[in-house]
Structure formats: C-alpha cells, structure tokens
Image (cartoon, rainbow, N blue to C red; front, side):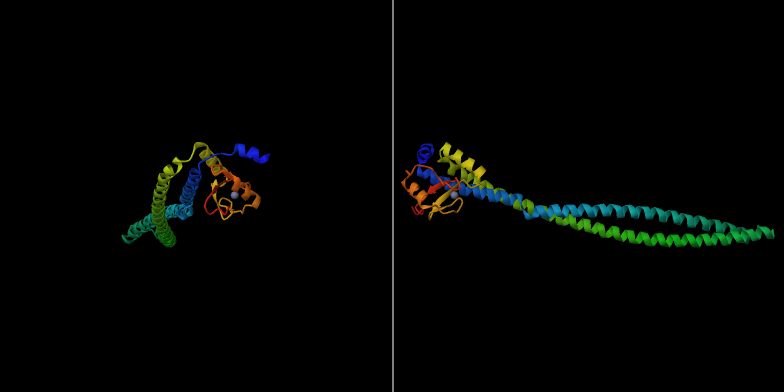
Length: 257
Ligand SMILES: [Zn+2]
C-alpha cells in the first residue's frame, strides 16, 4: 500500500533530465564552495585582527602625542621662568655693580635676594632638565608608535589588495559557473527543479546524488537489497528518492543494479 501511494506521488522525468540534475548539482556545489571561500578568505580574519591592533596602537599614539604636547608646553613655561628670574638677577646685579645701592643694610638685603634668586634659578634649571628628559622619552614613545601605526597601515593596504584580488578571482569563477548553470537547468522540468531547490535548502546544499555501486551519492550510505530491488523495477522515468536521506537518486550505468 505504501509503495502504491509512493508510486502515485512520484515525480516523472526523462532520464536525461535526471542526469542533467547531477550536472546542475555539481555546478551548484561548486558555486557554494566558491561563495564559502569568498566569505572566509584568510585575509578577512587577518584584516579584522590587524584593524583592532591598529586602533589600539592609534589610541596609544594619540595619548603619546598629548604627553609630548603637554611636556612641550611645560618646557616652554619653565624656560620662560628661568629667563625671567635670570633677568631679575641681572637687574639687581647691575644696580649693585653701578654702585646704586649705598646703604649697607640695603646692600645686605640685595645680596640675600641675589642668593635666593640663584637658588631659584638652580631649582628651575633642574626642573628644566627633568622636563627635557621626560619630553625626550615621550617623543621616543610617540615616534615608535607612529612607526607601528604606519606599519599596520601598510600591512592593511597589502591585505586589502590581496582580499580584493582573491574576491575578483572568485567572482569571475562564480560568473563562469552561473553561465554554465543556465544551459544545464534548461532541460530540467519545472516540478523536478522545484523539488531539487527545496532539497538543496533543507539538505545542506546537496539535493541529488548518483546511485553508484549501490551507494547514494548524496549521503554516501549503501542501499539495502530490498530498496535496490524496488529501484530496479521502477520505470526509468520515475524520480527515485533515497529512503534514508530523502535525496533524489539518479540511476547511472555504474549504479550496480
Ligand atoms: Zn542518501
């Protein structure tokens, strides 16, 4: 009873159309592989990783630039402070040298101030040296990070070019497959093509397999003798489905029936 129901529902298609389905499957599988390759190019992962690294480096480079700018401003300020105190010391010294301060008490106070100004200059010059040393370190960091960001940009440009080249090649191959597909599909009746597409969608892209050496080309399982016997007695234009995987089985001269 089951087989009657099955028989009645079974699609009919010219054996040549069934064989054409194998060609179509081969082309579609090839296109699937090409699309998968295009979506998973090693360059894509490398670009993503390097872009993250570059962004981290660039953040550090911006911080280093801020440090250099701050220290440069600090250096300008401490330089100006030194000059200002030195100018004041010179003014006081000149007044003393010119004998403008005659009062011994004023003279003593002036000498005290000169000593204090000298101490202040020494302290500011120490600051100046310290700021210069820090600025030098910060500039080194900035230079190194600038080089690293530049290297990353260079490598990213190379990777992008390699990605684009490989993508163009794969697109070209896909266009060739698509061009071959049209004539391959032309001889296949509508209902068989619809079944094929439905099975492609639900069976991991493989809708049809050749029956070869008693094995299903779709799922690679061997068929049992009862199923083989039923297939043997089925008319050539009946579209056979593998009971196990439900894919379309196409009989070929190598089927082993
Ligand atoms: Zn199967």
